[in-house]
Amino acid sequence: MNISDKKLIIAIDGHSSCGKSTVAKDLAKKINYTYIDSGAMYRVVTLFAMRNALINNEKVDENKLSHLIDQVSISFQYNDEKQRHETFLNGELVEDEIRSLDVSNNVSLIAKIKFVREKMVAFQRELSKGGGVIMDGRDIGTVVFPNAELKIFMTADVEVRAIRRYKELKDKGEEISLDDIRENVKKRDFIDENRDESPLRKAEDAIVLNNSKLSKEEQLDWIVERMNEVV
Image (cartoon, rainbow, N blue to C red; front, side):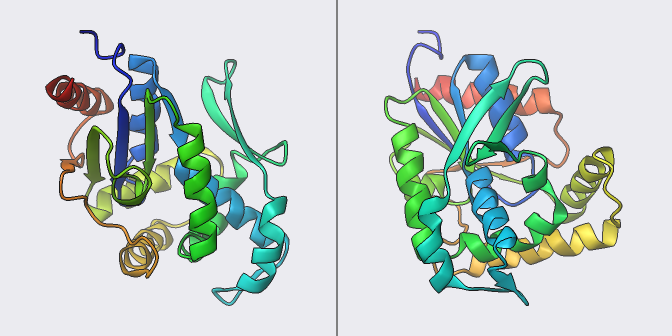
């Protein structure tokens, strides 16, 4: 059986800036699956909260956000010209804006809020009906899809992740220091792993992929091998 013939749900969890989204997108294209960027959803809510002045001094006005969150409409489109998946907030293209360091510094504050997670999880499950889906995030294998046929937990050394993120932002023209990026990575790890609501952890049946020294193609080959083992 061809691996694309069986519509699996593949859950990819792991630490920030370890390349989960890049691998998931490339894999979806390689095996003709649908890619869903769960992290982008939380980034969109974060951007919405920032635009509405709901985050101050690392605290979120949860009461106001709870009343406004139904105004948040998230959609995805694939841009053939740029060959990338793009994210929209209420019809506005925000793909580049949600990847900024300002959003990165605040997304963990939003992602730990229970009602935000409940809304996003419901949306993620709705998008994934029928299988043939690859989704990456922090709690995909533990909360969103605990019965996913293949669960992968991705990680990489902090310094490797910081350098990757630094290069990504520099390529976009952002002026930022590697030290600031490194601290952001460490901070997000701590918040993600210690939050009360759906903390980042490896599912018991997840397979660890440390990609500190692997190329993108090596990672894809590794995952396809794991897929063949469960098909």
